[in-house]
Amino acid sequence: MKKVIIFLIFYFVFPTTFITSSVPVNLNIVLIVDSKESMKEKIFKLNKSIIPNKVLFTIGIIESGHFTSSIFRQANNAYGIKCFKKTHTKCKKGKEGYFKYYSSNEDGIKDAIRIIEKYWSPTIKKDEDWFKRISQKGYCAPNESKAYYTLCKKVYKKI
Image 1: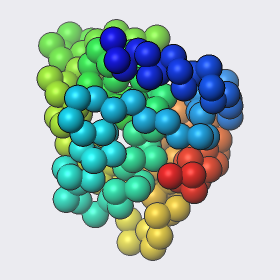
Image 2: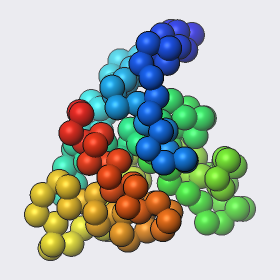
Image 3: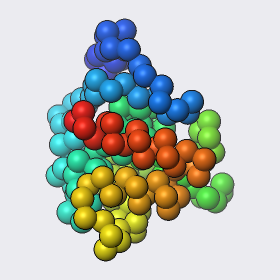
Image 4: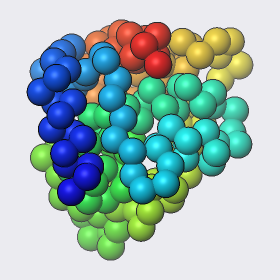
């Protein structure tokens, strides 16, 4: 109940900006905090990879609608990780296909790190290069890659 009240307060206080038709983003960056630690703290604590924490956090914000999407709330999937086998037992149907279901936020974060880490390349020299690489290599829909890259950069600068 507390999360819903916090969300509603911020929903009406801060306007939502739509960068692309399918990716709503509030550039004021509001985080819904669960019982003990925020998603930012969880991500920073769990990330032991080559991916910068701020990059992971930015992607999580975008993919989960500031950690408020139904896929995040119902499936602990903050990164929009999809299932490609509909019969897989850890899948949930969403508006845009089947998404992986995780038993905890931590499991979802660890899987996202494992997947996003595969996009690493020696050409990545700064955080912004991660956004370019993942948008070019299929993390988002091909027709949204340029908008996704631009959105990542804008959100990244705000956090």
